[in-house]
Amino acid sequence: MRNDVFPAFAQALRDVGGGLEDYRIGVIDACPQPATFHTRGDGGACDFSSNELWMESSSPALTNEFRCVGDIYSGDNSCNGDNDDEQPASAAAASLEQGGANDGFLRTDALLVVIAITDEDEQPTPNANAQQVYDRLVAVKGGAVNKMVFLGIGGSQDCDGVYGSADNAGVLKEVSGLFAAQNQGLFWDLCQGRLEDGLSAAMDVIEEACDDFCNDPDGCDPGQPCTDNDDCPEGEYCADDGTCQHVVL
Image: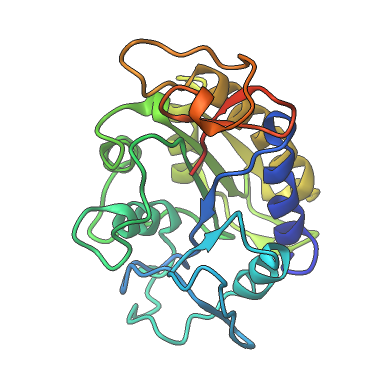
């Protein structure tokens, strides 16, 4: 996956809304201890051009940075391996909560996209049900579910698939379903393979969420003509096609 799926996702972000320009990407493994974004992969330092704990869309080497950090390095976490290292959605929430190492990553005027992938299931430590995991995630955007999108990737059953064996990810699927019920997420079955199709489906949800997202209290008009960012309302930027589009985080 690190050689094709992750780089493909970086490129897919560029294609949202006719050419998304302004976004940033943070990567963490499924252990929230510590809840710090990765700046290295299993092969060594990824040398983000942003000089931050996250990647910026302006990086000339974004695809390679994503490929590097997608080769997940877990040598610095303190999980004991007793299923506490299989809580990707909870780890994402922990990494985004205020006061942590990743402060400065979140932007109030940007859509937040969370992708949680596991070959087991969401197993929060301490124990939490799907509703509690959902609530914790939404809380990082001030309780506004319309300002985020969630993609859960896991097994819909126990299986041996293209990416190896996977357990039934019932809790992760339920968390994803809570977002999907608000038209803000989806679940992709790891057992069926073709993860690139899952990312493509996620792009459709993200693009629709971008169209609906607005941080301007006076309202916004996505798609209005522009020549530069100053022509667009808060929460939007001037895309390559000369129209205002929503910022995505």
